[in-house]
Image (cartoon, rainbow, N blue to C red):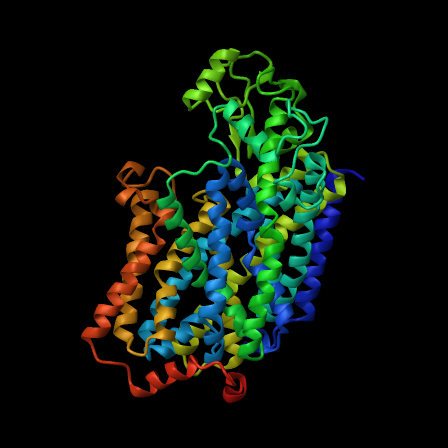
Length: 594
């Protein structure tokens, strides 16, 4: 069967599964639309949470960032998993005990203020919209290659697919769709990784293959018996790149990791997943299961990145980096198929009939070029988001594996996009319309408002994703910084500080979100459009890039909230009693009826 036809069949079958689940689990009430009727099994919720969490940034982009930066970008693994543990231990059980549907609802009731609720809604929309841009971008990349359409057409197709099952099913439909998507994406991710690990090292476990010795008979002058990472370090330094295992600026790595950690703990679309289980203890169990399911992919990602980078080098230099580069007319088929998308491009700059790949921006790379008579890096375009999707083709794996990775990449992007869009629509319909604008709205009217809000959110996210600010993981990192600066401090203080009042929470959220948005605007421009920034990277505050600013914004939030709360009246006694009761987990399910 032709590869394109096979891609259509496999991806089409996965879509049919998602649509079937949405029809079967169609939400008939606001409780089902917002929280799946609070009847989701902890294991099922753990799998759905893992799919919600492992977005296009995890599936598509993370390994690409690790591949081209090496050890430095392992901070994505540490920050995201560490943040999930933080959320599971410090936030999820207590928020579930509170018994509400959404994060802004908790903020509004805990801080006894509709103003606090509205500010939380604004923060949620900013965070989720930024995050969903990365998901839709990743989905567009996957569709553009495997369905052989433009990235814009792929983005529109992705929007239509997620609109059908998310608008129809709400949280109930999304939950069971995400379970199916997790199964698709984890199989799609691990099978190519196992194949490639066997090819390069003979070890079927990619995480162990990363630290194994190289096989015989490999291209690129690779010496058998040498550890894979040693081999990769040597090939990269030959071409003028930094060693794969090298690290730079531990201070910025620590700051970025912290931003990802506390940003993770404040992500509203993941937090609301813990509102779907019957009781508090189930929230803890579902968090534990989610970590198990997440680990299956996250322990594989470093190996995928390293092995893919090795395969790229040996493709470009099949006889070794001290020999001749690949002939321009002998590039592998996967180069030709990906060039059609515009996400990969080569150009014979010196007309010698070969394609040279090296770091022409470094002194070492320039020395290598001079020694070998080269005139410039001729791999002129390589979008890092294509790496995982191209992996099976790079390694010459069977066509069915290529089709499977297509379905997996699309599933990863759509699963998280659906969760984010639900968070946005719930905030608008439940926290703005129902709680502030029209408290007397009927349940049927609220459900209709939720569906309309989701459609509007999908259209807005699609338009913004047409011009994303960077790779999927880079775009997502901005959302983590915004969550770290706004919602995370407010939730933490709402649970663990009886003295924190509404004035402090409002002032803190505004300080955190405004300072972070201002920093992003100054250095990234209007809607993150390149060329519209007011300041340049050499003017960073203490050298801190915009993606790393989350902890600074969080510090503003904590500091302002503390000062304002101490200068104003304490919360009413019933609120302080509520905070006290929320922090007592024993017997919480029975005591609260939740």
